[in-house]
Length: 274
Length: 99
Image (tube, rainbow over all chains, first blue to last red; front, side, top):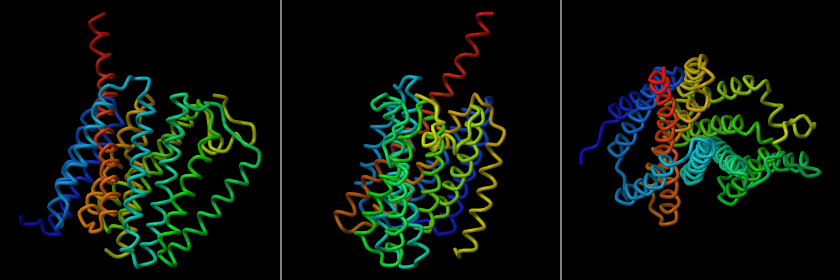
C-alpha cells in the first residue's frame, strides 16, 4: 500500500477544513442548513480516509472495528431520539468527544518532550475532562436524573478554588516532569471541576451551558492538534471554539442573560430556578 | 510547522469562526450548535493516529476506546443534526398544503 506524500495529506486536510467552514456557514441560514451539514459530514469522511493513507498505521482491523462499534451505537440512537430529547443527546455526544480528546492527549504525553507540547497536553486533558464531566451533569439535569435546581453546598466556592489550584499545580508538574501519576491527578481534578462548574446551573440555562461546553471541547481538540502536530485538528477545533463562543453569547442574550450570570449567578442568588 | 506559523493559523481560524456564525437566525441556534459539535468529533483523526502507533496493549486499549468515543461524537453528531433540520423542512410543505 503506497502512502500519500505529506503534501497530498496537507491538501486533503485543507479540503476537509474548507468543508467545515462551509458547513458552519451553511448551518447559519435556513435555506442552506441541511446542505451545510452534509458538506461537513463529507469533509469529515475525506479527513478520516486521508489519515489511513497518510502514515504507516498498525492495528488497522481493530481501529476499523472500533469505528464500526461507535457508528453502531451512535446512528440508531441519533435516528430514534425524540425531538424533546435532542439537546441531551447533543450534550452526550459533546461529552464523549471531550473524553476522547483527553484520552488522546494523555496517551501522547510519553512522546512529548518539548514543554510547549506538554502544555498543550495538559490543556487538552483538563478542558476535555471538564467538558466530559460537565456534559454528563447537563444530560442528568435535562433527563431529570438529578435536580434541575441549582445544586450548591456550603463552601462550594472554596472547594472549586482548591480544585482549580490543584489543577494548576498538577498541570505545572506534568509540564516540568512529564509524570504519568500527576497527569492522572490532573484528569481527576478536571472531572471534579466539570461537576462543580455545572451543578450550580439552573435547568432553564442548561442549553446555554451545553453550547459553552461545546466550545470547550473545540478548544481541547485544537490543543490536541498542537500535541499531534496535526493542522486539521488545530483548525477544526479552533473553528468550533470560536463559533461556539459567539453562539453561546448570542443564545444567552436571546434569553436576556449574561454568560457569567448563568455560570456563577447561583453563588449570588441570581440564578434561574429550574 | 513552527510556533509562529501555528499561531497565524489559529488567529485566522478564530476570525473565520467568529464571522461564519455571526448572522445566525435564532431558530437555527440548536442545529448550529449540534453541527459544530459534530465537527469537533474530528478528534477521531487523532484517536486513529494514536491507536495506529500504539505498541503496548494498554495504550492500544485506551486508544481504541478514544476511537469509539470520537466516532460516536462525529457520526452521531452529523446524523442528529440532519434529523433536526429534517423536522424543520417537513413543517413548510405541510403548512402550504393546509392553505
